[in-house]
Image 1 (cartoon, one colour):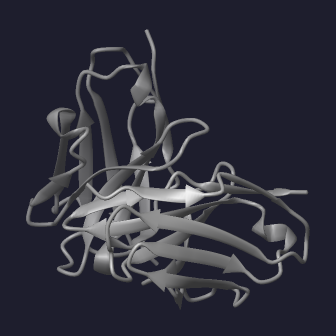
Image 2 (cartoon, chains in turn orange, green):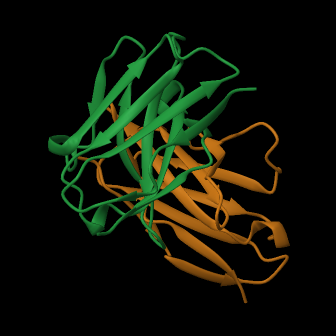
Length: 107
Length: 119
């Protein structure tokens, strides 16, 4: 099974900061990686798919990059609405795996 | 706009079977383009995929839960269901149903339902 490891698990940042979250796969997943944002009490929301494609309606300050086993989610200028938990997700051979999550907190 | 809604008991006793149903509205569960899935999240923890089903009935399960999970589909009711047997406190979680698109992108999600395992 493919394991997904996110880092850091918690990140403290201020409004306006550039924020980067990393996700590593235990084996190559090409570009089949997605990123989700989850706020307390809500279902996750898709932000990025195929490693770097922005979901419709998602602000352009969100971007994704990477391929193979290492991926990043970047928020270019953190906004108050962005304080949330972020998860990466891979799909391979009819299985889904999520990373452990990164909580972005107010510094 | 496609919507999914989970329903079922919010409290299940240890060793019993957890049963949930997801009702799909605003679209057909029989679409050939999508799978349908269950994902759970224990309180304060991360997301765990439970399993997925195609409208034809083909299923795929998380190996760690496979021995206890059954997912089924009822196309006449536009619903799919989850059964998880022999539950323990570790199965306490918010359970989400969702549509899985190309490369199993998860969108949209249901609102989620909290199931507590307790006597």
